[in-house]
Length: 393
Image (cartoon, rainbow, N blue to C red; front, side, top):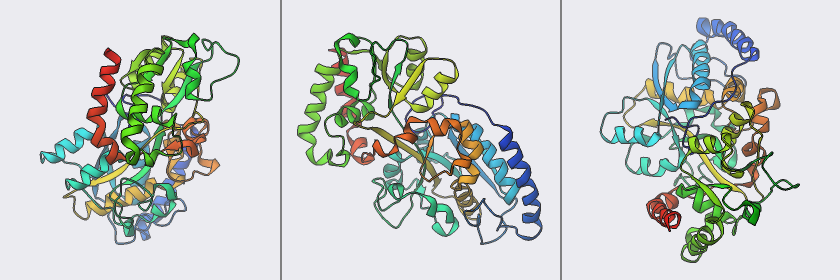
């Protein structure tokens, strides 16, 4: 099972590459000839500064693993990067970044770079499983928007240090089948799913972060960071809402992305939780599905890149150069055609795919809520137990 992004919990697919990407790769091939003959190690990266300036690393190999549905886009980007720099990035999918970290703990992780969800960063950092990213080798860190920089990111305790680099985001969203939706007006709020006519027709996530945080936002949409300091009273309100408001409505409790895809494609739910990347796939397959980020907001997940502890130069620097390359909007054009996920840096319109433009997460980024991953991680097991008690009661 492969993930698309941090928390969809299953594989999805999007659209394929276009002639634009092929033309762009040909142009890069011409530029690469110049880079290799006289500018090795200083080749251009599409307008965001040089890839690196401390020497020629051509011939270096970086071993990379990432979320399965990101692989087609990542492989294309890695090929372009090798053409420009001579650095080879070998790519392979994993099923879960927690498995990568487990291998690191056991001393069996032969990786140089990997995708990871930002929720995993605090524990990985505290256990010494990953090492800091050196900004001097990643000039395109300057492209990352303020919200996702260390001084504002809840997963980074030091405002001057990048333990990992967040470069993608997604969220859950409110989706509905337009042919089954029984009302003239489209839903705009999570509470629109609580109408009596929809009893038993709703799909709702049972995963702790989505179930708890989505329900929390229905009461305190502007205060995700205040959850911890008001925990005792607010978590009881969440349990009460899940037990009394949502349980009668929910016909399917989703455990992950495959269940979401199946329920919406088989029309066993009318509306409920869904992920924009899955909605894009359902739409491409002809399913009459729409989605929106509700007015109360939605839970935002983020993933990015990290370098395992123990990776040394020159491989470490080569991995950092690839991170920088990935943060240049010009290098994202083909990637976003494969995986129209949100990015933590602005994408000029000329590089935006249709899927990216139409993504509910991208369109509603200002309504997405970032919760403290340490806070959630410490309570996830307890939340899971409580949710299962409510479902079974």
